[in-house]
Length: 353
Image 1: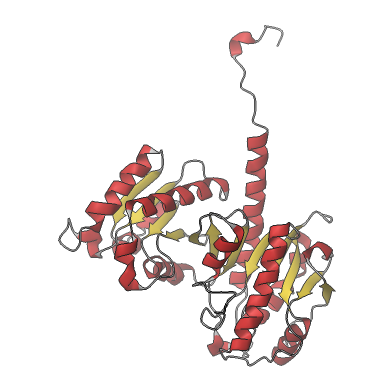
Image 2 (image 1 turned 60 degrees about the vertical axis):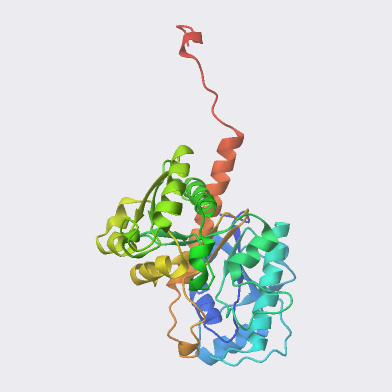
C-alpha cells in the first residue's frame, strides 16, 4: 500500500487527560502505519512531556504544517498549540480546554479542506473547553455547526449499535424536546447510516420507549402513545423497518437487542448506560449524519487515572479502524451510485449472446 493510504486526523483532546497516553500506545503498533497515515493535531512539546512522564513507547513524530504535508510512512504531527502551555496531569484547567480547542479547530479545518480523510477525536472536558469560539455541549454539536449535516450520536461495537434522539441536554428537558418529527428525523439518519456506513441492506431498528415499561399502556406516561408510536408509523410508510417502542430494561436484559441492527434510545443515559456496560473497552462514538467521518473512543478524559500509565488504548484503536472502514464504505457506495449497473431486458438478447 503506497501513498494512497487514508489520512487519519487525531485531535489530542484535553492535554491533562489520557489522550496522549492512548494515542502513543495505539500508534506504537507498526501495523497502524501500514493501514493509514496518522496525523496528530496537538503539540510536539506536550507529546514529549507525556511520553517522558509515563515512559510511553518512543515514536518519532514528523512535524508538518498541515495534513496536506503528511508523510505516508511516518506518524505526523501538526503543531497547533503555544509551546509554553502548561500541562497539569489529572486537572481540569482553562489552559487544557484552550489547547483542546486549538487542536480540534485546526483538524476540522484540514478535514473540511480535504487535507485529511477522517477525524478521530481524543476526549475533551466539555466544561473547560467552553469559550467564545466553542459554546457547544460537546464535539457532536460543534462538528455539525462547522461541517454541516444533521448529527446523530451513534455508539458502535461488535455487539450492538445505539443511537439517541436527544443528546447532551438536561433530563428535565427530554420530554418536551421529543417530538414525532425529531424521532422520524433520527430514524431516517440512522437507517441511511446503517446502509451507507455499515453496508446493511435492510436495517432493522428497535426504538425504545421514554417511560418505565414503555408507558404501560399510558399508565406511566403517554409519550409512547402520543409521540413515539405515530413516529414509527410514519417511518414505516417511508420503508424504514422500525419496531417498538420497547421497554429499555427488557430489551437489554433479555438479549432482545441482538435481533436488531441498531437501537434508537430516547435520551443519552438510556442508550449509553447499557452500551457502556456491554462494550466499554471497545466501544466507539460515531457521529452519523455528517458529510465527513468522525469517530472517538467511548471514554472521557479519565483524570482519575491520568499519569499512571494504565489507560487502555483499545477504544481509540477501534475508533481509528472504524473511521477507516466507514470511509471506505462511503467511497464504495458513492462509486456504485455513480456507475450503476445497466439493467438489460432479456428479450432484447439474441441467441448468440
